[in-house]
Length: 483
Image 1 (tube, rainbow, N blue to C red):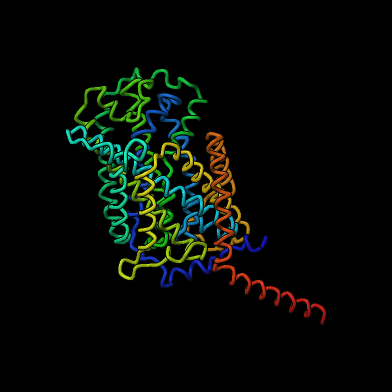
Image 2 (cartoon, helix red, strand yellow):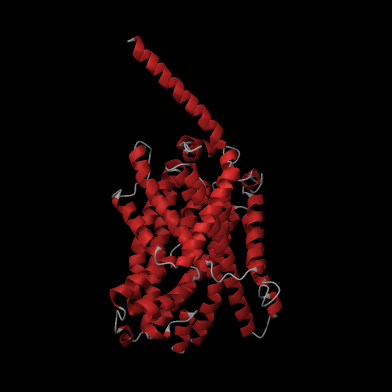
């Protein structure tokens, strides 16, 4: 068993999967993939994290914090780009780890990604519900608390349930229709952010930039650790590998371009925000809207508040998309029940998987308060990034002959820097979060040995390969003795 749990998936098997009846429809081009990446990244973070990080950690030097985090994310993005160009198949880090490190590690990362996408989707749905309820309240249309809050304070969070149900239906129709819908809401979101930058630039007071680093470099680095989480989500781009046209070229473009564009927008927002209002006033849940109201641009504040709904919707859509593709990849390998990898003959999408994921996420969002899940999402993402970088180093050493349309530069330096940064950020999280993560890993291993290990499709293949290897070794031994 010890040897079998580390069995690795041959890359040729992955390439052959692309031509099977369980392959997904390739319908995403470069522009659609960049827009998907932007939808993953520039969601709620730009409207919330900026103020908290500025007030409590970085001050006006928040710009530097965003630059530091962006550089760290670029290291990870370069690793993603190499793998995506080499193995253009669904599964993201799960698939990459299966090839480089073996089945049990792949399962653990897949388990982590399942919780990352599923829980984050539920959390974003709750946030979306809060925004829509506040927006309706401002127009005089007040929804009763019994249908806008989970048990204990109400009966059900109905808006959160309904938005997940709606987006699940859109995902069922197929990736082409989903990306079209996502493109519309992402473009609206980018327009809202540009509106804030243009309007806010007229109200910048240079005096608000002093002192520039009120908490010193320690605060800037702590701020970088916090705003890093505004970037997470670009990894969802790699889950679309099997549905991307010319993936060896398109995926690196989509991953790196979306990260660069979102970084520019984040840095611009941070610079304008801190120029409009003294940093110590920004410690609230809606700093962008607050800053506009503070300088008297109430009309723009209303538009930005409405635009936040589009950002949340985009993040929610891509989270659900990423979750279904992880389920799909793990199911196709036999580590999860086959129901998750069944493809609809017309839509060419994993319909049953999408419906099941949507149902579970909507129930979580409707009936559970999710105040403690954000850190769990973060530690899961950072763990995946660490395994991604390790896999790059391992495959470069063990299989240097593999064709790579895009190569991460300066290996192993860049992957090692990525690992160091991620480990540093993990230890900035609370001890309670680390304990909960450890418990979830124990549960994951239990599920693997109870189901995945026994049902793995690689298990029988590995047995055959081992017998062939033994046969070759015996032949070589006889040949040597005859000499």
